[in-house]
Image (cartoon, rainbow, N blue to C red; front, side, top):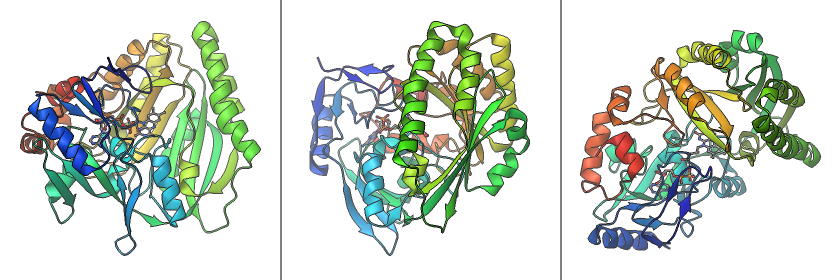
Length: 431
Ligand SMILES: Cc1cc2nc3c(=O)[nH]c(=O)nc-3n(C[C@H](O)[C@H](O)[C@H](O)COP(=O)(O)OP(=O)(O)OC[C@H]3O[C@@H](n4cnc5c(N)ncnc54)[C@H](O)[C@@H]3O)c2cc1C
């Protein structure tokens, strides 16, 4: 029996069949054959979603042979990549072409189709999510038809399929809007809780990309401001990059986490030390080397988007809850922002948003913490990240999305027999 497992180890599937299509025709053939056998079809990306959203049940399509940039349009400033292209390959390919995405999240291991399907986002900027940078995509729908979608061709499909949850079809290629390559300067600095919350709105306004991390049980924040510069790039030395991004943020953080798991009473003091160890630094580089960094300590995560103006109050409430509940939380809470977008199931649909992300070590039971925090965020009209842990289901998600019915109607049109269903989609989208 074949077993599929996601990155965090929380979701496992046992697909009846596994196929690695080498081109679009093989994706079409696989969908048609599976449908004939009454098998569901799922193409997981790199399995970096924490939920079971990518869990294959019938036929699993592997994305590994569908990689690479296939076309560049310098007039339209768009680049098309095959669906299984990992973001790190897209980024280095774009860099070689003198191009870049506008914004991205904090790792580069996901596939392009997987990343957009759950609304993967970074912070700030004119667009925060990868989905909002999509200008077109090709989709194999439930009856095996290949649908090309752009702003001119099937625009209503593109509008929703940019965050499609894997429910509308198998994406075979994604076209991104790109920019000429630029240099991004990172300015990272510790701040106190009061200082960071006091000037948060100003920091968001003054910087192209602003985010901050709060170390629970302490008053410590780490802030990160990324802005474009016309000066020559001044990358971190290899030694400093290794010290910060590998040794401190991964190796030592992993040991500290393991210690905190064994002796939870030490967590507040360990967080204080971690908060101090990450000192101020400034460097500049090509955008993907500033936005992303390696994450080798495996964790579990929940992230919610709340209306931008509710973000800090929600964070304060979460802090009060953590202190009252007596949990020992060793991972920082991440705070990011996004402008409003127009994608039906985007967590930032129709409203500028503050994202609050909560993590625990992979060996820690997350349920009490995540469920407690989730209640706070629901109280602020929060929307859960589709790829991260949450307990919501279709009935209570529908009112959170003004274009929910439109998405469902499209699903009915593109996949009436629910070829692309799995248990997670049954829960969050309904039958
Ligand atoms: C360490 C880590 C860091 C992260 N950082 C961020 C971050 O900074 N910002 C953020 O927003 N999220 C972040 N995430 C979440 C992650 O970006 C999303 O869960 C993303 O969807 C994972 O992409 P994937 O390629 O692994 O796709 P998977 O998780 O494998 O799949 C996600 C969905 O995409 C669908 N899919 C994949 N390929 C296709 C296809 N070809 N056609 C149709 N559907 C397809 C799957 O079926 C599934 O529905 C992080 C996750 C981890 C583990």
